[in-house]
Structure formats: structure tokens, C-alpha cells
Image 1 (cartoon, rainbow, N blue to C red):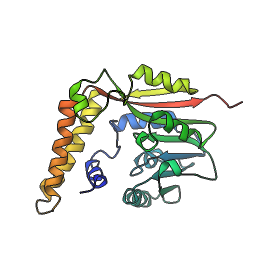
Image 2: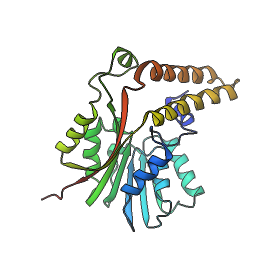
Image 3: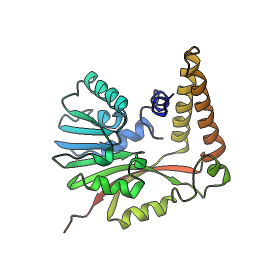
Length: 249
């Protein structure tokens, strides 16, 4: 079973592929999405959940979503058509780092997709290249709640992979960004996300006992669950930042 297939199953009950509740997503979008006519871009959009939710009650929005997985993009297009938004949201199956458009965007999103750019700061640099004057960026990435111990490192992380929250925000500001709002995911949001991830994969395996990927799915869920419970639970944090930038001279 391909990792992308596992991820698709894992997010069946938690389509926002990040430790954020529906209420938090609504609040972040209410803070971030401009009023009236606007263009949005989601770099690493996955199934397009953020862009589709942003459209609710906002008929003046036009949006593009970019993701490297063609199957995920196909699912996002189908969801947009089913919601009657096919003429307002376009999805592109390509590397987010290589995407270009003829116009700039009033809001650029990239939530939990910094791996596509090589880290948080490169993600912001890429987003800045698409931003219209006065536009903002909504970005979500991990940080260390406290210094990772050996159990967290054994789960597959490196100590220098992230910084603490204060250092992370300082680094963002040093690149000229101005925080306008932020949300730190709670333990409850993390737990809901992880139980949904592992539970969805496990349920799929139990419901498909004859599928040749049955055992691999159970193993993937067990491995993920162990890494979370015995490794990074309470150590790995997630922050979503709404950022503006002073006008270029």
C-alpha cells in the first residue's frame, strides 16, 4: 500500500490534514480570508478542504489549489464539482514549489506542507512569490513544545528538525513577516487528529480482511500509534500563523 493511499484513508474522518478542530479552521479562515472579491492559493492543498471551506458564504472568492498527488487532486476536483464550486476553484496536480500563475493572490495558504519546500522559512519565501500587495499568508507547521527526549527521536525525528514556539516566531519575524493572528493546537486537537488517523486506517483494514493490503494497513496504524503515544505526544506542537508583510520599498 502506497503511503499516499494510507494518508487518504487516514484522513477520512479528519479531512483537515493537521491537528485542528473544525471550529479552529473556521476561526482561522474568518480571520484570514479577505472580504469581497479575492484570490486564494493553497500550496500543498491535499484534498482541497481548506479552499472548499473558505468558499462557504463567500461568493466573491476564486481559488487555486496545488498538490503533487494526482489522485488527491482528482478527489479535490470531484468534491468541488459536487459542491457546485467547479467554476470557482481550480486544482493543479504538480509540485507546489514549481507552480506559477499569471496573477497574484490576496491570501496564500500552506498548512502542514512545509516538507514540500524544505522547511517553514522556504515555504514562506515561496508564498511571498505569489502574494499580491497587501496580501497575507496562512501557514501551519510544527514546533517543539519542549526539548525532544530520546523517545521522540526514536520515533523518527531529529532534535534540530524544529525549534520552540518563541524561536519559530522570532525566525519568521526576522524574515520581515508580521504576525496578525495565531493558533496553537491544543492537546485535545492533537489527540482527536491522531485517534482519527490511526482509527480510520485500522477500521479500513478490519472492513477489508481479504484485501492484500490488510496487514500492511494494520501495521501502519500500529506504528503510527506507537510513535505518537510513546514518542511525540506532548512534545510536538503545531502552530498556525496568519502573517502580513510591510510593503516593499
